[in-house]
Length: 184
Image 1: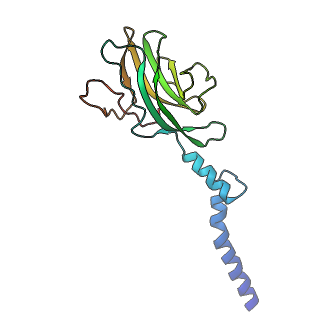
Image 2 (image 1 turned 120 degrees about the vertical axis):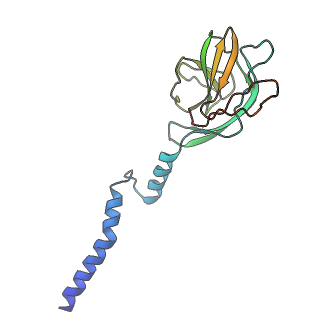
Image 3 (image 1 turned 90 degrees about the horizontal axis):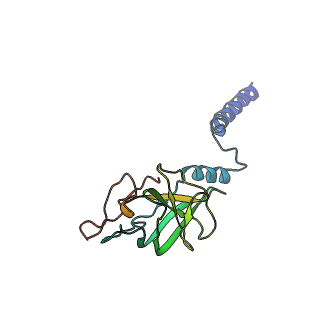
């Protein structure tokens, strides 16, 4: 009689301990061990982003132009081969000329300083890329799109980095790209 009660108690204890594990197990990445499961979960939460207050090109003053003056940029760009975030830092350099005619351009930061990215023009020897396209492009492989530029009348007329709309250099004689932190 005692043995039967002990067996019931052991079965009840096992069920209490294993049921939560089994329920959780259905909501996993099917990783072979707990460490890899945690890695996969963290990868799911990793999104590319700019490191403030970098990536703020000044719109050329005076006679305008098609080239941004030198500016630096730092960001975490998602490597599409393994989905890890890669810290990219670009020392100050100019970008341009954006010379494909009037319209909307997009600036991007690539994980490498060489190699072609389909449809994008690379600023030679830098992480910077640009693309003329009316609508906002999705982030291409290993690129973070970080600014929208408007060219009108052959000069850079506006530069915006999205929804935040801050101007970190108000009243100093030149317009600076307004901040966009939603990861375009």
